[in-house]
Length: 300
Image 1 (cartoon, rainbow, N blue to C red):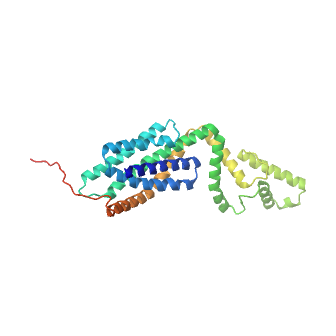
Image 2 (tube, helix red, strand yellow):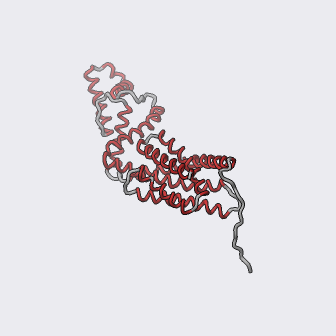
Image 3 (tube, rainbow, N blue to C red):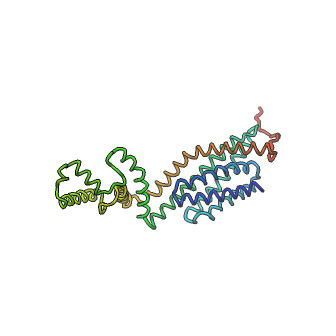
Protein backbone atom coordinates (compact mmCIF):
# COMPACT_ATOMS: atom_id res chain seq x y z
CA UNK A 1 0.00 0.00 0.00
CA UNK A 2 2.88 2.36 0.79
CA UNK A 3 4.35 1.75 -2.67
CA UNK A 4 1.03 2.61 -4.35
CA UNK A 5 0.58 5.85 -2.38
CA UNK A 6 4.14 7.01 -3.09
CA UNK A 7 3.68 6.09 -6.76
CA UNK A 8 0.52 8.20 -7.07
CA UNK A 9 1.99 11.18 -5.20
CA UNK A 10 5.19 11.33 -7.24
CA UNK A 11 3.31 10.86 -10.52
CA UNK A 12 0.91 13.68 -9.66
CA UNK A 13 3.82 16.05 -9.07
CA UNK A 14 5.59 14.81 -12.23
CA UNK A 15 2.58 15.77 -14.34
CA UNK A 16 1.90 19.08 -12.55
CA UNK A 17 5.54 20.22 -12.85
CA UNK A 18 5.63 19.10 -16.48
CA UNK A 19 2.50 21.14 -17.24
CA UNK A 20 4.16 24.17 -15.61
CA UNK A 21 7.34 23.71 -17.65
CA UNK A 22 5.41 23.40 -20.93
CA UNK A 23 3.33 26.48 -20.16
CA UNK A 24 6.25 28.67 -19.05
CA UNK A 25 8.71 27.47 -21.73
CA UNK A 26 11.54 28.25 -19.34
CA UNK A 27 14.41 25.74 -19.22
CA UNK A 28 14.79 26.12 -15.45
CA UNK A 29 11.32 24.67 -14.91
CA UNK A 30 12.35 21.34 -16.49
CA UNK A 31 14.67 20.52 -13.57
CA UNK A 32 11.81 19.57 -11.22
CA UNK A 33 9.92 17.18 -13.57
CA UNK A 34 13.21 15.56 -14.62
CA UNK A 35 14.21 14.88 -11.02
CA UNK A 36 10.72 13.63 -10.19
CA UNK A 37 10.49 11.25 -13.16
CA UNK A 38 13.85 9.75 -12.14
CA UNK A 39 12.45 9.02 -8.68
CA UNK A 40 9.15 7.83 -10.15
CA UNK A 41 10.91 5.22 -12.30
CA UNK A 42 12.53 3.65 -9.24
CA UNK A 43 9.18 3.31 -7.45
CA UNK A 44 7.46 2.11 -10.64
CA UNK A 45 10.09 -0.60 -11.04
CA UNK A 46 9.46 -1.76 -7.49
CA UNK A 47 5.73 -1.85 -8.24
CA UNK A 48 6.22 -3.95 -11.38
CA UNK A 49 8.18 -6.46 -9.30
CA UNK A 50 6.00 -6.59 -6.20
CA UNK A 51 2.40 -6.14 -7.37
CA UNK A 52 0.08 -8.69 -8.95
CA UNK A 53 -1.06 -8.23 -12.53
CA UNK A 54 -4.71 -7.38 -11.71
CA UNK A 55 -3.85 -4.74 -9.12
CA UNK A 56 -1.13 -3.31 -11.32
CA UNK A 57 -3.51 -3.14 -14.30
CA UNK A 58 -5.94 -1.00 -12.28
CA UNK A 59 -3.09 1.19 -11.02
CA UNK A 60 -1.76 1.68 -14.58
CA UNK A 61 -5.10 3.07 -15.75
CA UNK A 62 -5.51 5.27 -12.68
CA UNK A 63 -2.03 6.71 -13.23
CA UNK A 64 -2.90 7.38 -16.85
CA UNK A 65 -6.23 8.99 -15.90
CA UNK A 66 -4.49 11.45 -13.54
CA UNK A 67 -3.29 13.13 -16.73
CA UNK A 68 -6.84 14.41 -17.28
CA UNK A 69 -6.75 16.20 -13.92
CA UNK A 70 -3.57 18.15 -14.69
CA UNK A 71 -3.63 18.82 -18.43
CA UNK A 72 -6.39 20.39 -20.55
CA UNK A 73 -8.79 17.97 -22.17
CA UNK A 74 -8.34 18.26 -25.94
CA UNK A 75 -8.26 16.01 -28.99
CA UNK A 76 -5.00 14.44 -27.77
CA UNK A 77 -6.14 13.69 -24.21
CA UNK A 78 -7.66 10.29 -24.94
CA UNK A 79 -4.66 9.25 -27.03
CA UNK A 80 -2.23 10.32 -24.32
CA UNK A 81 -4.12 8.38 -21.63
CA UNK A 82 -3.99 5.24 -23.79
CA UNK A 83 -0.27 5.76 -24.44
CA UNK A 84 0.43 6.13 -20.72
CA UNK A 85 -1.62 3.08 -19.73
CA UNK A 86 0.02 1.01 -22.46
CA UNK A 87 3.48 2.18 -21.38
CA UNK A 88 2.92 1.30 -17.72
CA UNK A 89 1.44 -2.08 -18.65
CA UNK A 90 4.26 -2.78 -21.09
CA UNK A 91 6.81 -2.01 -18.38
CA UNK A 92 5.07 -4.54 -16.13
CA UNK A 93 5.14 -7.25 -18.79
CA UNK A 94 8.82 -6.65 -19.53
CA UNK A 95 9.57 -6.94 -15.82
CA UNK A 96 7.60 -10.16 -15.48
CA UNK A 97 9.39 -11.57 -18.52
CA UNK A 98 12.73 -10.88 -16.87
CA UNK A 99 11.56 -12.39 -13.57
CA UNK A 100 10.29 -15.60 -15.14
CA UNK A 101 13.03 -16.16 -17.73
CA UNK A 102 16.20 -15.53 -15.73
CA UNK A 103 17.68 -17.82 -13.14
CA UNK A 104 19.00 -14.95 -11.01
CA UNK A 105 17.17 -11.77 -10.06
CA UNK A 106 18.88 -9.03 -12.15
CA UNK A 107 17.50 -5.68 -11.01
CA UNK A 108 19.77 -3.81 -13.44
CA UNK A 109 18.10 -5.46 -16.44
CA UNK A 110 14.62 -4.75 -15.05
CA UNK A 111 15.50 -1.12 -14.39
CA UNK A 112 16.83 -0.78 -17.93
CA UNK A 113 13.56 -2.08 -19.41
CA UNK A 114 11.29 0.05 -17.22
CA UNK A 115 13.41 3.18 -17.70
CA UNK A 116 13.47 3.00 -21.50
CA UNK A 117 9.72 2.35 -21.80
CA UNK A 118 8.73 5.01 -19.25
CA UNK A 119 10.91 7.71 -20.77
CA UNK A 120 9.71 6.95 -24.29
CA UNK A 121 6.03 7.24 -23.31
CA UNK A 122 6.68 10.32 -21.16
CA UNK A 123 8.47 12.11 -24.00
CA UNK A 124 5.59 11.33 -26.35
CA UNK A 125 3.22 12.91 -23.83
CA UNK A 126 5.40 16.04 -23.68
CA UNK A 127 5.61 16.25 -27.47
CA UNK A 128 1.84 15.95 -27.89
CA UNK A 129 1.27 18.73 -25.38
CA UNK A 130 3.88 21.04 -26.89
CA UNK A 131 2.25 20.53 -30.29
CA UNK A 132 -1.21 21.32 -28.86
CA UNK A 133 0.10 24.30 -26.86
CA UNK A 134 1.84 25.93 -29.83
CA UNK A 135 -1.01 25.19 -32.25
CA UNK A 136 -3.45 26.82 -29.84
CA UNK A 137 -1.23 29.89 -29.34
CA UNK A 138 -0.77 30.37 -33.10
CA UNK A 139 -4.52 30.10 -33.57
CA UNK A 140 -5.39 32.62 -30.82
CA UNK A 141 -2.45 35.06 -31.01
CA UNK A 142 0.02 34.34 -33.79
CA UNK A 143 1.74 37.74 -33.51
CA UNK A 144 2.69 37.10 -29.89
CA UNK A 145 4.03 33.65 -30.79
CA UNK A 146 6.20 34.89 -33.66
CA UNK A 147 7.42 37.79 -31.54
CA UNK A 148 8.51 35.37 -28.80
CA UNK A 149 10.08 33.04 -31.36
CA UNK A 150 12.03 35.86 -33.02
CA UNK A 151 13.21 37.05 -29.59
CA UNK A 152 14.61 33.58 -28.87
CA UNK A 153 16.31 33.39 -32.27
CA UNK A 154 17.75 36.90 -31.90
CA UNK A 155 19.07 36.10 -28.44
CA UNK A 156 21.05 33.21 -29.89
CA UNK A 157 22.21 35.04 -33.03
CA UNK A 158 23.41 38.34 -31.49
CA UNK A 159 26.50 36.91 -29.70
CA UNK A 160 27.65 35.37 -33.01
CA UNK A 161 27.13 38.65 -34.88
CA UNK A 162 29.00 40.60 -32.21
CA UNK A 163 31.98 38.25 -32.50
CA UNK A 164 32.01 38.49 -36.29
CA UNK A 165 31.67 42.30 -36.50
CA UNK A 166 33.72 44.32 -34.04
CA UNK A 167 31.71 47.51 -34.61
CA UNK A 168 28.38 45.83 -33.92
CA UNK A 169 26.99 46.59 -30.45
CA UNK A 170 23.57 45.17 -29.67
CA UNK A 171 22.43 48.10 -27.51
CA UNK A 172 23.65 50.83 -29.87
CA UNK A 173 20.78 52.90 -31.41
CA UNK A 174 20.18 52.43 -35.12
CA UNK A 175 20.85 56.09 -36.06
CA UNK A 176 24.10 56.10 -34.10
CA UNK A 177 25.20 52.96 -35.95
CA UNK A 178 24.32 54.65 -39.26
CA UNK A 179 26.32 57.79 -38.34
CA UNK A 180 29.34 55.68 -37.45
CA UNK A 181 29.07 53.77 -40.73
CA UNK A 182 28.74 57.01 -42.76
CA UNK A 183 31.80 58.53 -41.09
CA UNK A 184 33.85 55.40 -41.81
CA UNK A 185 32.73 55.17 -45.44
CA UNK A 186 32.73 58.94 -46.18
CA UNK A 187 34.93 61.04 -43.82
CA UNK A 188 33.59 64.25 -45.39
CA UNK A 189 30.25 63.48 -43.72
CA UNK A 190 31.53 65.26 -40.59
CA UNK A 191 31.83 68.58 -42.48
CA UNK A 192 28.32 68.53 -43.94
CA UNK A 193 25.66 70.89 -42.56
CA UNK A 194 23.44 69.38 -39.86
CA UNK A 195 20.44 69.40 -42.17
CA UNK A 196 22.32 67.46 -44.84
CA UNK A 197 23.66 65.00 -42.28
CA UNK A 198 20.16 64.34 -41.01
CA UNK A 199 18.93 63.85 -44.58
CA UNK A 200 21.59 61.22 -45.30
CA UNK A 201 20.92 59.49 -41.98
CA UNK A 202 17.21 59.40 -42.78
CA UNK A 203 17.85 58.00 -46.27
CA UNK A 204 20.22 55.31 -44.95
CA UNK A 205 17.76 54.38 -42.21
CA UNK A 206 14.93 54.04 -44.70
CA UNK A 207 17.00 51.83 -47.00
CA UNK A 208 17.78 49.51 -44.11
CA UNK A 209 14.17 49.40 -42.94
CA UNK A 210 12.87 48.81 -46.47
CA UNK A 211 15.35 46.00 -46.92
CA UNK A 212 14.08 44.28 -43.75
CA UNK A 213 10.44 45.21 -44.34
CA UNK A 214 10.00 46.81 -40.93
CA UNK A 215 9.40 50.28 -39.47
CA UNK A 216 11.43 52.15 -36.83
CA UNK A 217 12.17 55.69 -35.65
CA UNK A 218 15.95 55.28 -35.45
CA UNK A 219 16.30 55.44 -31.69
CA UNK A 220 15.75 51.68 -31.27
CA UNK A 221 18.77 49.53 -30.35
CA UNK A 222 20.21 47.19 -32.96
CA UNK A 223 19.03 44.19 -30.96
CA UNK A 224 15.43 45.39 -31.34
CA UNK A 225 15.91 46.04 -35.07
CA UNK A 226 17.36 42.55 -35.48
CA UNK A 227 14.44 40.99 -33.64
CA UNK A 228 11.91 42.86 -35.78
CA UNK A 229 13.72 41.80 -38.94
CA UNK A 230 13.81 38.16 -37.84
CA UNK A 231 10.12 38.28 -36.91
CA UNK A 232 9.19 39.74 -40.30
CA UNK A 233 11.24 37.12 -42.17
CA UNK A 234 9.68 34.31 -40.16
CA UNK A 235 6.19 35.60 -40.87
CA UNK A 236 6.87 35.94 -44.59
CA UNK A 237 8.48 32.52 -44.79
CA UNK A 238 6.12 30.55 -42.56
CA UNK A 239 2.83 32.28 -41.95
CA UNK A 240 1.54 32.24 -45.50
CA UNK A 241 2.18 28.58 -46.40
CA UNK A 242 3.76 26.47 -43.71
CA UNK A 243 2.18 27.70 -40.48
CA UNK A 244 0.57 24.30 -39.90
CA UNK A 245 4.05 22.75 -39.81
CA UNK A 246 5.36 24.95 -36.97
CA UNK A 247 3.75 22.93 -34.11
CA UNK A 248 4.87 19.68 -35.79
CA UNK A 249 8.47 20.89 -36.09
CA UNK A 250 8.49 22.10 -32.49
CA UNK A 251 7.04 18.83 -31.23
CA UNK A 252 9.56 16.71 -33.16
CA UNK A 253 12.46 18.97 -32.17
CA UNK A 254 11.58 18.82 -28.48
CA UNK A 255 11.11 15.04 -28.64
CA UNK A 256 14.51 14.58 -30.32
CA UNK A 257 16.27 16.87 -27.85
CA UNK A 258 14.67 15.30 -24.80
CA UNK A 259 15.33 11.83 -26.19
CA UNK A 260 19.05 12.62 -26.16
CA UNK A 261 18.88 14.10 -22.65
CA UNK A 262 16.86 11.11 -21.46
CA UNK A 263 19.93 8.90 -21.96
CA UNK A 264 21.68 10.75 -19.13
CA UNK A 265 18.52 10.90 -17.00
CA UNK A 266 17.98 7.18 -17.65
CA UNK A 267 21.45 6.30 -16.36
CA UNK A 268 20.79 8.34 -13.22
CA UNK A 269 17.42 6.62 -12.77
CA UNK A 270 19.03 3.20 -13.04
CA UNK A 271 21.74 4.08 -10.52
CA UNK A 272 19.13 5.45 -8.12
CA UNK A 273 17.01 2.34 -8.61
CA UNK A 274 19.94 0.04 -7.86
CA UNK A 275 20.67 2.02 -4.71
CA UNK A 276 17.01 1.90 -3.64
CA UNK A 277 16.81 -1.89 -4.09
CA UNK A 278 20.07 -2.29 -2.17
CA UNK A 279 18.70 -0.20 0.71
CA UNK A 280 15.40 -2.11 0.73
CA UNK A 281 17.22 -5.44 0.87
CA UNK A 282 19.48 -4.26 3.69
CA UNK A 283 16.42 -3.01 5.57
CA UNK A 284 14.74 -6.41 4.94
CA UNK A 285 11.79 -4.64 3.30
CA UNK A 286 12.28 -7.02 0.38
CA UNK A 287 14.16 -10.27 0.10
CA UNK A 288 15.30 -12.55 -2.69
CA UNK A 289 14.16 -16.15 -2.42
CA UNK A 290 14.90 -19.24 -4.51
CA UNK A 291 12.07 -21.19 -6.15
CA UNK A 292 11.69 -24.04 -8.61
CA UNK A 293 10.44 -23.45 -12.13
CA UNK A 294 9.17 -25.84 -14.79
CA UNK A 295 10.90 -25.65 -18.16
CA UNK A 296 9.88 -27.31 -21.44
CA UNK A 297 12.31 -29.74 -23.12
CA UNK A 298 12.25 -31.68 -26.38
CA UNK A 299 12.60 -35.48 -26.29
CA UNK A 300 13.04 -37.91 -29.15
